[in-house]
Image 1: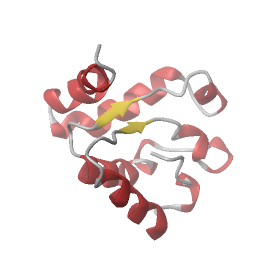
Image 2: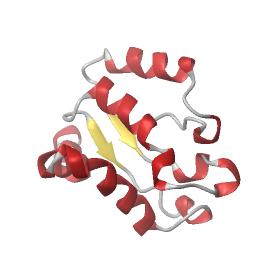
Image 3: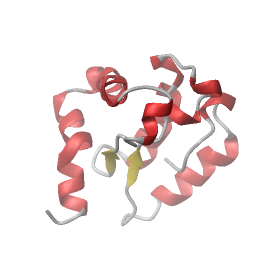
Length: 112
């Protein structure tokens, strides 16, 4: 996601840059590194949804990939925390969205 400053909220510049990047159909977006972009590593699950929504809208479900940012994420939370945040976000989007985000899209991108 380009390490947006979660603690400062959505920035118009970041949103526009995501839109520009997503216009290139060979570019995928990896959702990772979000825990450590919070203020003093304090966060709630809801702090990330607006950022996830921007990249989801821009890239669509077929060009998003999850990345845990482990072990760096340990400064602000656990690996399990990152997975649960993603699962919570994906819950209303369905199992196919989650499966694509958690592996199918990476397999396609990396030709695995």
